Length: 311
Image (cartoon, rainbow, N blue to C red; front, side):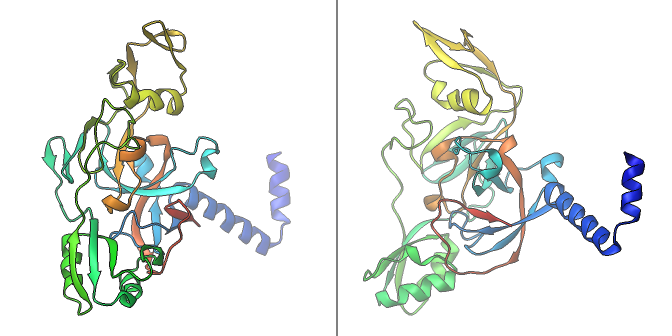
């Protein structure tokens, strides 16, 4: 068979051979080295803007990721789709496997230490305008999508950090920019969706990020933290019999984690669906690390429910 292939290759037109070699090289690069995606959402503003063309590095999947990396991954909630057909999301790793993550009144704490750069995360600001007709110009200047504007209103809610808010406050058509109030209460849509964990988007945790090889001591109280990890991501069957929890028909008291997990947040904290809302990101869902922006389009994005479009 090898000899037959060599003979066929020798008689193939050199232009066809060049095309086939280029195609194979492109596939290898796309699979193992680099790929490109277009940002669609505001969840990473002001790090990434809707319309940005971003280079995604594939090799960190083998060399290792670090806290603070911006990663691209497959949507963990789209269980009804094959992995390669799931939408791509982009967030920042704030919790590595084994870390303890917490938000205290909006401030990120990792292993009981505050985040190194408090301006990494943006929060929601309410910007008051002298003329509501200037909202469109403001969004265009910031590279934000037009759906953030509500017609006829002289206020607009934007994902900003303190530095950006100060800059906007100096514009002649801006009255002021004030941070939105911190979240309060314990909404039911916050992971792990249990009244035993009365958390919200600004006061969250502490939560331990599972690492491969960790032994989890499972109880009725903490099962909401790990049921999806065990049943969906690692493929076991969880049940109950009388007062006992079961895994694959056996008593469930301890569970050894089979792969690494990450806790991710969008840099735009109040405009991001992230680990606070659906939990941990499995290592096998991550497709690469976002590198530099190849091209900043800075135009309105879509509301498609995904963060990135693959190329």
